[in-house]
Amino acid sequence: MTSTLSPAIAAKLRASFADQAMMATLGAELVGIGPGTCEIAAPILPGATQQHGYGHAGLMFSIADSAMGVAALSLMPEDAEVLSIEVKINLLSPARAGRLIARGRVVRPGRRVMVVQGEVAELTDGTEKLIAILQGTMIPA
Image (tube, rainbow, N blue to C red; front, side, top):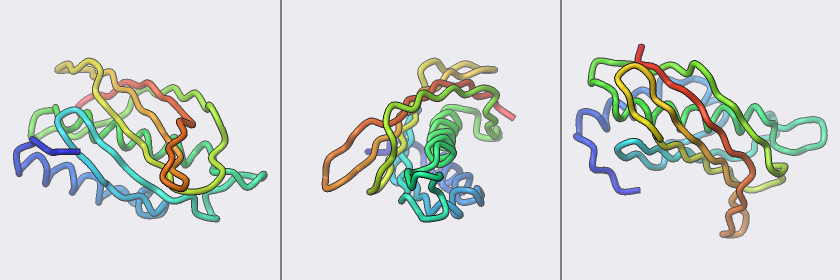
């Protein structure tokens, strides 16, 4: 993703992501930011699987929620922070192996409420497979 954000906003987004202990726990990394967009990648670590060995839905939700939040934060006033107030997830396929890529984007920016969408894809041997879609609402805090 090519960033056309101001250096101050880009630094703020990176710092906000770095402050999320959950992302560090999951081994997630911020791989792309832009105005109203964000991309986060994460491995499926052994500690983030469910009883059948698939990537846990909580892993997919967490990285997508953060991607959507960072995307929203990129369009908020410089002194604002972001909070999720509602997120819905549809799980389309199990996360079997490989690396997960979460992409968040702002659908409708607003001063008080932002509607966001997210997708999670599994990347295996250079091929992406869509495994989850999300829609949510973010507010400045």
